[in-house]
Image 1 (spheres, one colour):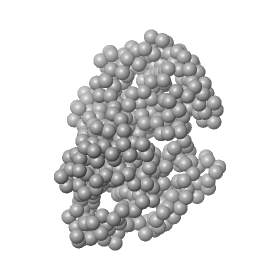
Image 2: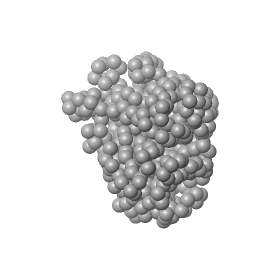
Image 3: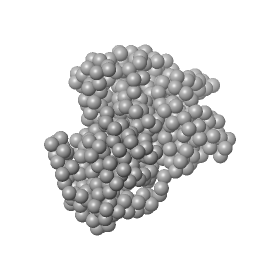
Image 4: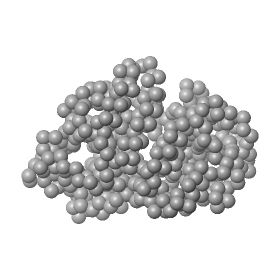
Length: 454
């Protein structure tokens, strides 16, 4: 043994959101992510409690990707004294600005907190001034005995695993692992030689449909909605799920697999992010890159209407059925989708398609569980519309995929820490790892600190 390193699970343990891990080695304090904890609300009250570490003592913050549950508390970190480096891939840095800007706009409207002191325009600019871009596989020397590398996790554009090497021992933080193969992105990189592994477990207790099954299901749901002359609502996350769904719909329209009808892309943030996607097409997989060579309108096809202005959004209601409305947020806890849900959920001819993860307690999860009256944006709404779920469009690996990822390092890994999942999901995956191998797996709780012998 040459050195001691520690991991403190400051967030992202016992919950899907709020990713925040403190890694300490060789006298350096390093954070992996600093995200918002999101449950019923965009940001739960716990986010405004003091950090369990001293922000001004943190040397480096690695941001694995641009979802707000991985970067949403960075302005608060700066407000409490952090002035270290922020490191991520170039696409993550490009996407971070709009994502933080959008979150700030929503959070400033909460009279409960003095958020104007944290999420100021000046603080957001300061955040980006500390932010440096690092390519995949570029070596990052931290000390003589400690280095880091970013590896492609295949989750969203620019998403990364963080691999630390300390005295020759490899400590890997997967962050969110992609549901490979993706329509747009390369598969996550395979790692077989980690000594310690911190792995997500969002879908640790269940599997997705196959990619062929999910496409067939989407096609069938669209056709059925067309036949019923209804409105198909699709709540989406603005980052990645929106773009992947547009790519899928583009293919279905071009192949004449679905009828022509108005399709509304009603998310200003998603529209902004889609423009960034076009700038970073080199990060797409070979299939998507080839498609963009032949189709420069990959995210814009016949029948698609992108609505930036709120006045345009309101006019969607008056467009005759059948039609499709794609809008944020993905869990129906905010964004423009809530206005469409209040309008269209009471009608049994309409359909709501849930194509992403729904956190416990969110309106989306309640709708998914069959609640007939749900509070959406402060108003109670009756749910008579048909409710359908396609999990195959999730950006996360399913249970079998996670087990396969862990199995690849069975001969070397000393311990696996299962995080970023509801308790049931994390415990299920932990037990499956133990049952299927000789690997020592453990699901830490928030605040736990572990020592790694290196």
